[in-house]
Image (cartoon, rainbow, N blue to C red; front, side, top):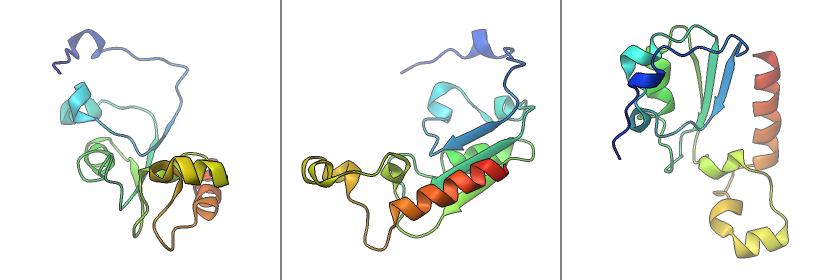
Length: 123
């Protein structure tokens, strides 16, 4: 997909005071290159799981953090995947949507949600 970022390169919304991005993806695919990211003028905190296969950290959140001035990158260690950023599931959800509801062994989605919420509040 070709995306022309030129029309939006100089947009700024003064109401946006900070960005807290969870598992950001497709960063470069949507025209957000190093030069554009360097123009970010609000505080940015990016959080992603080290085991995220949907939006891998290196090419998404870590890429953004390398180029956004003073961005903070929080990498959740181990097998923490992309879906931990969605709600916890009940038994029906786990049975019908295991790809979204069943985490890797040792991953505690509820505890991660508390830690992420706490980090957002501090940020």
